[in-house]
Image (cartoon, rainbow, N blue to C red):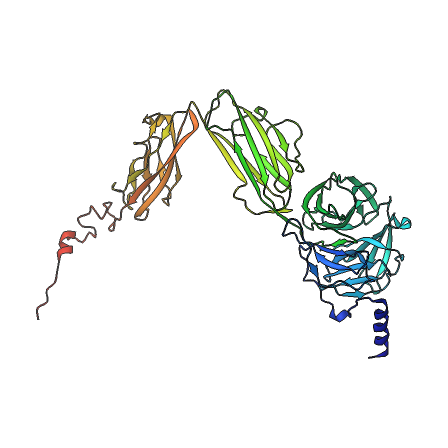
Length: 535
């Protein structure tokens, strides 16, 4: 063993530090949604975990093995340019690089960095490593470490006020560093370009958050709370600072968080909606009351989800009012009684529910169906496991509406050919309104599906016309009839049409043409001709 290597080996043997030579370091497999968590208890080295958000409560499977006892790596951040985690040891104040197996490389002291314990840190998309200490002399100081230099160098960023977080996280969306100040329990944001600190608001869920994470796509901020009795994982509102519970987590001691600032963090949820007024008909000039329930089957809280309920067509917005009630822990942006359409932003805990009570004053002259649709959509911070239950429509018919009925028609025996086209028949001939044959002057008739016959039309009397040049074949069309006095009173039906072949183009369909090839010989004679060969 060379002399220098023997000295290095002896040095690390004496201090008990687990150090791996640089060439054997294995990088993480690029940016990912993974949230990493480091922990070091009072007695023991540093362990590396993944904060697994595939289950509720969150779990933390370990990566590699725990470092030797003297290493207490904190203020960690994920470097998106080389795919390693970096942190500072609380004991010897050295900068360490951590690989995908929790092997570490000692990079030594950082030039320009005071030799104090650093507990907060993160790395931006340009390899700038921001760290902060909570010792009294450093409460108002932030440092930026340039990881591209060797040895790494630090620059002081004085802040306009002292803060004492247990972790900070860089937000790629707005370029700010976020954390929770322990004394005030407020979410804060720091502008790393000038050290300006903005106190956003009280989390209402404590102040000890040892691991802070941000979504690199939406800017959402999350925190894992340091606690042995109530170690929950929260989402923070960047406008109010208020925390919303996402999931139970795991007990933590000496923990810190790291996540690639370029990637998203998402949580699964399952929103569903129901809506009913417990009736199928309405009476003009009266009031309908609807109950809308938006539920979340989880497994995680749905944050910033949108609930929309538009005002039914033909109803003035001032005729619609609503109020909201939530289960404990869930929240809504609606305060008191509101009017008009619902466009609410909500947070719904797993197994939580938000209930809207909607009242509609129906005008006395209202006609047609009363159609009301509500939908719930998760934000980009969530993935909805089942979107088939996110929208529901409640339809009531006018109690004064006359029953309207459209029956299917078959015109396959009506002689319409490809050369001439023509009228195939009257599709309303068998339709009824209020139990009697329809008066075409009282209805609107519309082709809703041409069935492949381009240019097909229907007149005010219900006569369907097929243009010339349509290929021979059987076609199925759809149409609707709606009462003019009550446009929402409609019915639909299908029409079967056969277009016949006209081989010689003389305007007579082959099935009716005695000489369909115009050769002067009747088809019956041609078809009966036989040739006998006698040998």
